[in-house]
Length: 163
Length: 169
Image (cartoon, rainbow over the protein chains, first blue to last red):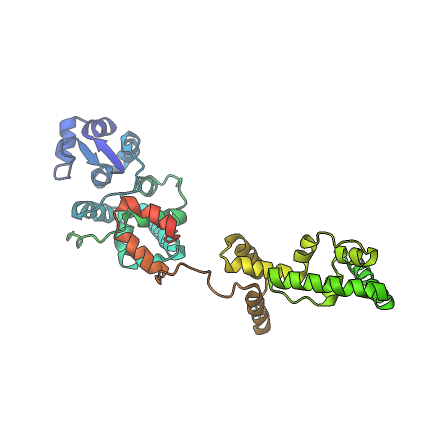
């Protein structure tokens, strides 16, 4: 899982009690021991002024593989729906660059049926999420990142859960 | 090469031809040398050289004029325009990506604004042997099909095979 954050890290970043965190994040899927959240799932419920602190506190394993399955896809579409106009603009740029990269890749046509799933999954990747949410300059060339990301993450996901 | 040295070079070769035509002894040596070089070029590179092209080889002129054994002329032979083209074509056919990229770079510089320019470029590409797609493996699969197969593998194995098959990048 790319960017994860524990309940205590969230509490420190938001400056509140751990119990408050649990209450605010009720309903969000957690790791098995109940202490770790996906940052992508926390972000939609966080206040904009807490975002930078949350990203600074989160653990990034820099994995290219972002996972999948109905829950992850539902989290990604919730996040997608919660994006501010500026964040959405950055997200669109990354998406467009990924598609451009896929078009240039040899045999990239094989990704066509999965483009929308892949674009949604982009949001789960740590570098993309950080750039989209915080607007920090990207460390990655999205065009060349696209084919590698798609190769690793491309798979048919179950129908996205109704939002 | 400047035009001046070019013409001087031509003169040398022409002078040589006239010298050979004048002398019985030179003519005999010239004919055996031509035979030798022609068979060598034919065997090695599949090119039928004309006597004029052979007279461009410095080592041949020296050997004919001096009567000594023909020196090593392989480098000069492969520098002849038609032979070097044949060498390049063979390398491209054998799947040498570097040579192919060089030829491609030369082609990329050619203008295609008008129909005749585009025709010239296509003709040049055919001469160089890069008008057809690079030789592929004989699996009969195109890149998209290969990538589709890759996508049926577990994520952890995909990158390895994608590099090996040269798709998805």
